[in-house]
Length: 106
Image (cartoon, rainbow, N blue to C red; front, side):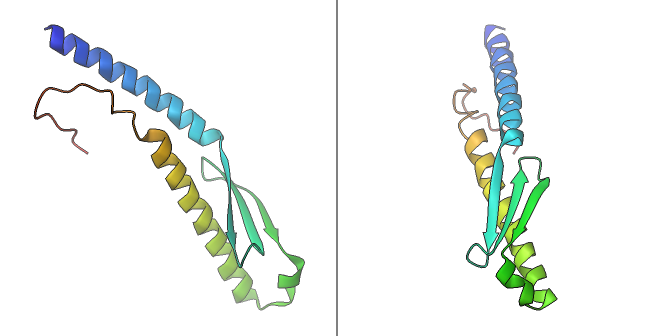
């Protein structure tokens, strides 16, 4: 029983750490860029776009070019958030002492 109680305590600790890491990730802001910085998208950890910056020199371009650059900047921001998420969540289960042969279902 002691092993099960210890395992349950560790699971609770990991859950608290994950919740804390999720709150931290939600509070960050990244800037996705495209067109060598001509388009910038500010996005928070909840994937809310907070600001879009378009260099004035782009305004003479065709609408489709600007749309593609905005989409690319958004995708860049999402990719940065995913990387930050991975970094924040990595290592959380590292201190979790599982019985031999036990694997997480994910």
